[in-house]
Length: 271
Image (cartoon, rainbow, N blue to C red; front, side):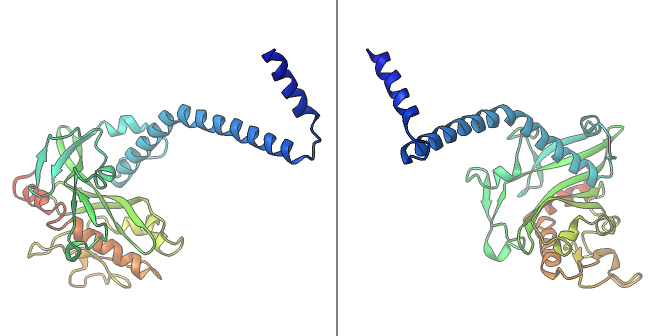
């Protein structure tokens, strides 16, 4: 008897006119249900691949800022030269509190157990929170550390820019600056991605004679031979606020709230 009821229900549905409201509603519901199941299954099945691709993209950006990647290179093989360590920003000392290989500084910045609220007067980068611990990617050649790659982030004009600053093992000389995520205006603030602009960071110095953060993006073009030239980078044409955001970001992260305690130890004692 129950089977007859189900069969009758199916027949009743099929017997409905194609332009009936009830049949349209039922068909739309069925289509939505099938699509929802398909999307959910696809999302679950593809998540491991998405996570892997995200990790590879991060490694690729780290290698690029250090000048260690060329198109077609095996990313994992190239990244084998890099050792990841966590540092306590307050003390500048290495930390083994968490696993450096799986640590995510962006997630940590949102975790009340792992972050620090930045006082408004000190928040030059306009990020409000920062992790207590930050990863440092150490590039090694024959067991000697040659570069330090430091994650940085800060607000530009329209978005928070996330990137990496590569520094020589003197803790002072910049190798490169590169951003892997932002939403700045293409052709203006988006010129942070321009290879020509990124190239002029190489060789610039972070700290002035007094030990304060001196590196900055100026308005206009750096004059060769001018006083302080080694601490200055050309501004982005038509993107004053993004340029200022980059300067403020580096002043924060290279300052005492950021990596300065660590880099000061590097300058004094080596890596």
